[in-house]
Length: 403
Image (cartoon, rainbow, N blue to C red; front, top):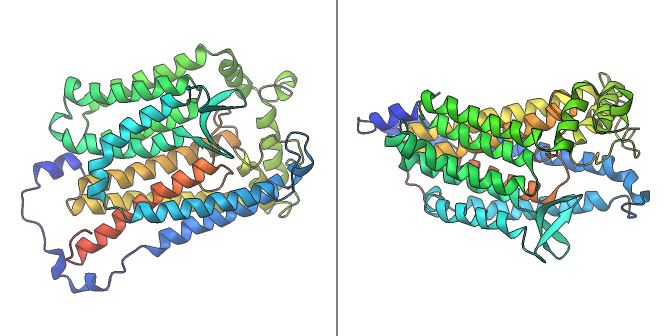
């Protein structure tokens, strides 16, 4: 891992002239392998959303056509790709200038869900802003802006990374404000992901261990405290510890037990695409939070492993792009790239862990795969940021200026 603290201490030293290397002249302008992995996850997700939701057409809850969710998912992907194109066209220097205004915008979005007539409630949670037939989950936007805000903070406050008052307290104030507003929605999953993004980026930025450890303990304590104060969250934790208890099977562990049954039925090669039994009204929300269970049942351990490898490659590549940006003296860009990698990695890890019973049940989508318009659009925008960092890295290595 490149030490960003050491980079700042040595940034005035003479650096190698990248443009003098003739091999860099043939570097392509964009990493097509990243695009290929993103498209692979999107295509797999579209296929599995159709498969997992095909039985919902005759459900009393939805009463719609078999391809309803797949069509909407395809539309969200199209919107996300268009939005990602425009995000990619914006230079990191402009994102740097917009970081704090976007952070304030994210806080206002979190507040706006509680405005009567603007906020929209789904399944007992107020996490969305309604725009006609479209609902925007504001926590997804806050994940995006948090990457920008914390990266900007680390770059501008590098000299105070060993200070509690100037290094830690501003970060805690930001996380505290976001966590408080998310807890009112409530959305513990988004709180965990955003906290992981913030803590990970400040760690990569050189925050002292003497500050990071107490900071992490405080965040962990807040999460445990929020669970303890919520009877239904506490019940989920106890059900997760013993999901096969008859009372838990029919209660809080209902989704988990049917997810595990789906994985068990899939065995090595799966029962075949479209042949899942658990999606036939046994496993609730199979096309969203538990889509990995349907993948495991229909495509088996092979399909499950394939998904894991795609996410592993994408997260690893994000960190490689970030390290390359730091070497090229683009510290903000490097932190943004690694922040996106943390976001995708942590959210995928939690979703996978929930599906296989490693973590208590929590509503988080599998990035790029699960059904969910806000998640798809914002995640594609975040990956466009990653591609932009890589694009600017390649310009610098070819001796050109950033555009």
